[in-house]
Image (spheres, rainbow, N blue to C red):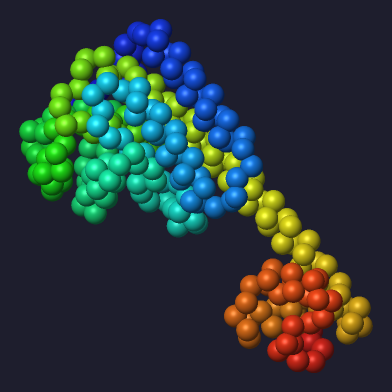
Length: 258
C-alpha cells in the first residue's frame, strides 16, 4: 500500500529525540574534513544508515537509494544504491535497479509499505526475487525536500510492528539531512582541490615563462601540449614543474601561439 506522507505517522517523544540525535550525527559528519571523493561520502552515509536501522523496530536491513553526483561523479543522475547495512539490502536494491522498477524506486515520490505477497502482485519483475532473498515486508519512504531523488528502504524478514511507521518516516528525514550535508561537504572539498590545482598550474606556467621568456599563453599551451602527448593530467605536470623547477621531458621547444 501507499502511505500518506502528508499526515503524521505517529507521535512518539522518544523517537523524536532519537531523530534529533541522529540529525546531530549527520551534521557532525558533514562538518568533518574528509579526504574528498565518493567513497568517503558513501562511508559516512553508511554510518548514518546503520544508526537509522537500529531505530526502526522489525527492520532486518536498510538501504539508501538515491541519485547523487557527489557519490557517483558527474554521471550520477540516475538512482543507485549508495549505502546499505548488509548484503541483503544491497542485493534487494540491485534487483530493483536492474529491472528498472520496484517499491524503492516508486518510494522516491510516495512512501510504500508492502508485504511479500503484495510485492509479487504489484511488481512481478522483482517481487519474487525479493521474496527469495527472504524479504517478507518492505517499508520505504521518500527523502523529504529532495524532489524525488531518492528513498530510504527498510527490509524485514517478519511483519513490521505498528510502531515502526513513525521512526521510519523520521529516519527518511534524517537521511535527507545527511545526504544533503555530506554532498555539500564534498562539493566544498572538491572546490578546494580545484583551486589548489589552479594555483599549481599558474605557478608552473610562471616557471616556464621565466625559462623560455615567453608569454603566459605560450607557456600554458606548452604545458597543455605536453599533457596531451604524454597522457598526463595538467595538474600532475604542474606539480612536477613546481617541484623540480624544470619542464618535463617531451616538452620540445618553445610553443607557438596560434
